[in-house]
Length: 333
Image (tube, rainbow, N blue to C red; front, side, top):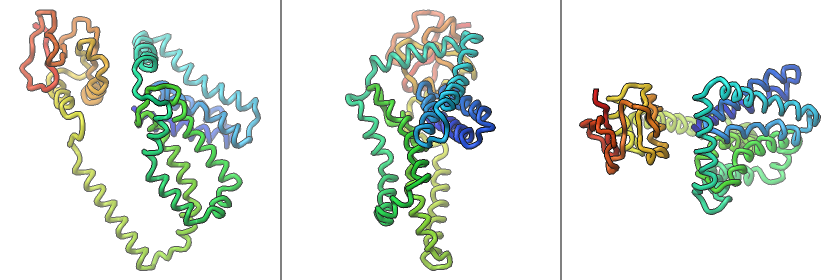
């Protein structure tokens, strides 16, 4: 979900930038950006709205649009996803029920009762750890180039653009500190913007070094050969990983067995105690488009954890499947 949201978040910022740089087509680009924000939020939820701040950041940093235009642009960018949600909620009861469950039973409940960390600064520490290799490379580039050269290269418009990207990245991470529900993958959507920021810091120095390189020198040819060999090795290794499971072995084992019996797009009843098993929900939908419902209405199948009591309804019989974590029951014909 975070990866999908990241794609739409990048698209939303891209088209917002197109709007800033092409005032005559600004509203068309802002509508596309707003649709992308809707899709980002529909992928993951509240974090998908973080790029709504892009207009205010542009106005604050670049100072190329008036305050009035910033307000108008922000209203357009915010209004597009809100209008789409209003349309969905009004015309689709299923959408209303699903989004209500997400907001009240999932998001707000977790924020209030399901804390995962003790410190609000946990996410910032994890961010540093996750991006440490890139930080080290960036610091090395600055050290080799020299602080004075670094300051000169990042002065003017280039430095302002860097600040803009960095602030967009921070809007995707700093708000996470408002709650004690934090995990390292929660800021995946901000990592592409941090990568852009680090790249902008390093690019002038690396470009300066590349100008001094002689493509015909033995050293450069060796470097190119090593790089090509590394790329081929990586692609081959990745290919050999197809079909291998590195985590959630038992859940995936059971999901595939259940998927071999239950038809796609079916609804399977589950015990309410299994409602928060999000990995099981996600794998069922991802591979077989099977929905798990904690309040089923005459479901053909019911899935239970092995150690839990059998369904109270005697019309269900357990299927003889070699499941490891669960038991699957089917309603008698």
